[in-house]
Image (cartoon, rainbow over all chains, first blue to last red; front, top):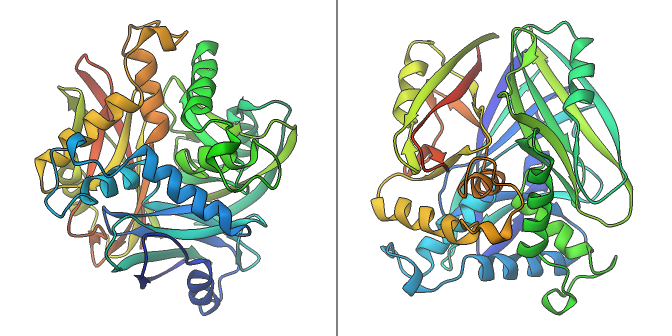
Length: 139
Length: 139
Length: 139
C-alpha cells in the first residue's frame, strides 16, 4: 500500500457550486492507482464539498437557492458577523454539507455514479482561493 | 494491508429508510478482517446514506417526515423538475445527508454504537435499485 | 502501512459544541505518524461531529441556536419521544451533521485549515459521556 497527497487550489470566482471532478481526476491520472481510497478534504469553514447532479444546470441553481433560504443572510438572527452578513450563514451552510468525502477507486477511476460530480460549495460573496487536500491510499 | 471491494445492489421498494447494516455485515464476514476501515459509498444523487437509531420504528417515520418538510415537494420552489416533482427535493435531501460513510472495524466488526444502524435513504417515490460501493482496507 | 485505533471518552457536560481537536492531537502525537488518514467516528445517534470555526465563541452559540430552530423541541411534531422532548430533535440534528470525519495527516499533523476545529456536538440536555473512535492508517 502506498500513499499520495496534494493540495488543489481552487479559484471560487462566484458564490455557489464549482465542479472540481475534472481537477481531481487529472491528479489521479498521474498516480497509476488501480484500486484505492481517495479522500477529499476542504480546509475552510466558509466553503464545503458536495457530491450532486452534474447534468442539469438548474440543479445547481436550485441547490444554491435552497441553502440561501435555509440559512439566510439575516443579521437579526446571528450574533457573529465579524466579516459581514454572509459570514455566519457561510458557517451554517458548511455545517449542513460536507468538509470531507472519501471515494473508493476501482479499476483506476473514482467509483462515482453516472450523474455524480464533486463540487466545491463557496459560501462567501467575495471570490476566494480555496485549498482542497487530496489523499490517496492505493496499491 | 489489503483491499477488498464490492457493489451491493439494494432494492429500495419504498421511499424512506431501508436498513442495510445486515447486508454490509454479511459481506464483511467473508473478508476475515480484524482491524480495518470500511467505506460505504452511494452512487446516486437521489438516494443517500444515514447512520441513525435502529430500535424504535417511529424514529424512521419522524426522520422521513422531517425531510419531507425541510425540502418539500413544491414545484413553485424549484426550476428543475425533469423527472417530476420529487426530483429536486431528492437532490436536496441527498445534499443534507451523506453519500459516504467510513466506519472503523475493530475486532472483526464495524465499530457501530449499540443503537446505530446504517440506512439507505431513498428519496424518489418510484422503487429503485441502488448501487452501494463497499471498500475495505485491512490487514 | 500500519493501523492504530483507540476510543476517546468525551464528557459532554452541556448541550452544544465541545472542541475535541486537542484530545485527538494528543493521541496522534504518540503514534509517530508522518503521512496518513485519520478517521473520527461517533458511536451515538444523539451526538455528532462537526468541523467548524474555532476562533469566535459566537459562532458556536449561533450554530447551536440555528439547529435548535431547524429541528426544534416540539412534541407536536414527532411520534417518537421515548426519552423525552429532546430525544427526536437529537436524532434529527445528528442526521443533519456528521457521525464520521476522515482527515488527511501530512507532515505529522491533521491537515486542518487555520480556523478549523473538530467538535463533538451533544444534542441531549442531560450530560453524557460519549465514545469517539479514532482509526489511523499510516506508514
